[in-house]
Length: 194
Image 1 (cartoon, rainbow, N blue to C red):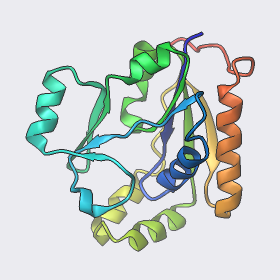
Image 2 (image 1 turned 90 degrees about the vertical axis):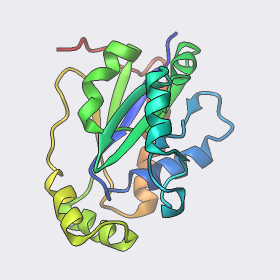
Image 3 (image 1 turned 30 degrees about the vertical axis):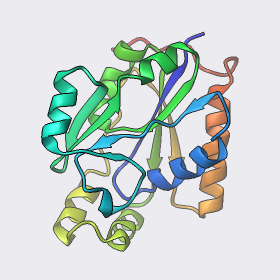
Image 4 (image 1 turned 60 degrees about the vertical axis):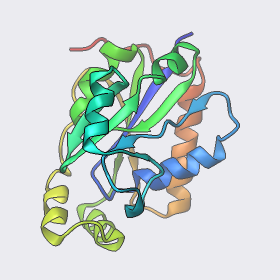
């Protein structure tokens, strides 16, 4: 059976990386899951998620060589998911990764089976979290919060997860959802792209 691409999306500051880090550690030895590292044109010293930091020139070279299954740009940075995820999906794994909402319409044509986990929290919580991490100016925070209500494209399965509650509750909800999605009996049939 083909695997499932699980796209974790939501506005910056909503807590996607916190949930992903917890699940990655919990499922480190679980053969059902792969949590690929993203390739980002961001300085590795800026912290946040564990990622592969590359220059813009290196990223462009990797992209021209067909090194990415998915790539996108946001807020002046380029992001990529390595091509190897395709083989992992074909082997039946659930690939769980943070992606941009702007590329969700590419998931089913590229990977067949896909599910979106839309992480949300109240805009004021998101703004507070962005300010606390100290990577954005007040203007950048305002712009990111303004994107809060961007819609998920029609035709793809979506589960919304409220990450505005306690961290323990959100983590439990997230790993329970991943377990549910990894169960072949429970996965919804593919929804055809619109």
